[in-house]
Image (cartoon, rainbow, N blue to C red; front, top):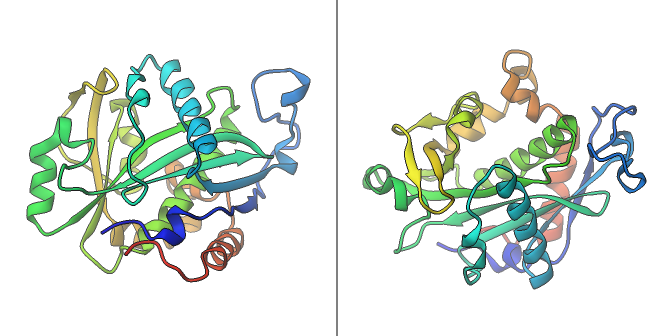
Length: 262
């Protein structure tokens, strides 16, 4: 299984505006005039980081975000991985790159999480599951909390769009997270596989979380209602169902029904 060329070589972008912004709030905690962008007029754009320039922008965001937490970022110096297995998305706010994440399809050499959770991932594979790894999730650390939440909401909706492509088969999403973030992912139904392990790649403790794509899609179907019960789902509700539908339709139109995997 590999990412379809329609998505890995996609040169377009999709845009959406949040309907829940506070007009009194600036996008960044920095008070410089260049960063006084009211979220009321914020346009979020998503594209694939499939050029050297876009990959460098994504790497810079990861370096800033991870570096702020004291993580080792030397892995960014490694040669880029083949695009047919690693799909990296770049998120911009008013044309300024502000966030990124990658989704990696399983390979004969395994996933990054195999370095710390080899036995746990082997057990999932032994049950007949295909694995997809969510990794390198990062946002500009200078964003104010509300904008960070809206950006996370957009990332989750894009992840949901991708998950729908795998919901008819036994496919699971996996992610290594900081122990402090376990509660967030549990709030969306992700399961904790085991206890903490040391991740040599970033030099920090990590926990393996996972969920079947079909379950993620099913739980997300009523995200607007779930937002009244769980703070985690409030991230999803930053965008209305109408906004998400329009964004999804735009993405499929851009891809010309080429699909996501082959």
